[in-house]
Image (cartoon, rainbow, N blue to C red; front, side):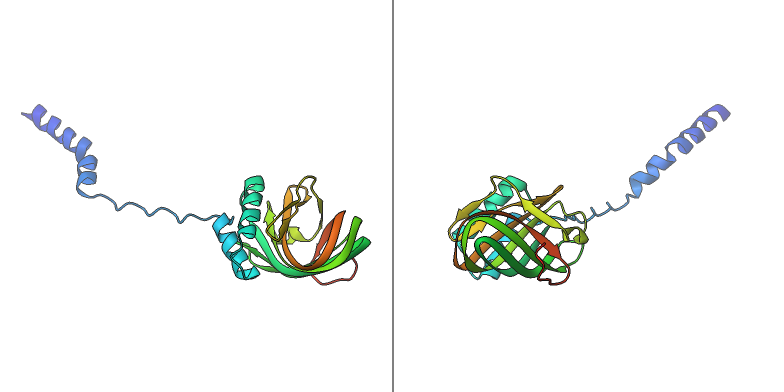
Amino acid sequence: MRATLGALLLCLIAFAPECAEGQYQRPPRPAPPHRSDTFTSDQVKRQGYDYFGTASRGLAKVVEEAFSRWGQPNGYVLGQETGGALIAGLRYGDGTLYTRNAGDRRVFWEGPSIGFDVGGEGARTMMLVYNLPATEAIYQRFAGIDGSAYVIGGFGMTALGSGNIIVVPIRSGVGLRLGANIGYLKFTPQATWNPF
């Protein structure tokens, strides 16, 4: 009798936690919200349509081309720029860098170019920014990446790089500037006339 009572007591002790868990089930923990530091193609197109004031098919195709080449950006710049060239050229612009979780930052850019290039232009510009480790990392020079020019429906796209960071300006402009050139853009926290 004592052996049976002892065995029953051992069984109760051994299975008590499982029985208790069976009666009381913790509510499942909610999954942490999905946080991404990049922008989707639809988000970028929507911002572009709002900014450029058009639902242009050309903008959609240029954005899709950028996404197919470089993926999802973790920042973008909306701004305006002006430039001109007669063999050597200059470009000046200003705008705002938008990021998902590192805040927004005012940026200015300027840069020289040289090549078979003549004319002047003013442009609204959207720049997709890839692999930006911190907002301050935008403040540097970005040179052209070979084979990155793409034009459709009044929108043009090129790519500029510095290390792992890629900046892809998408422009829709007013004016006449014909030709091909090489150059760079320098981003600064304050406006400056010095493109170098």
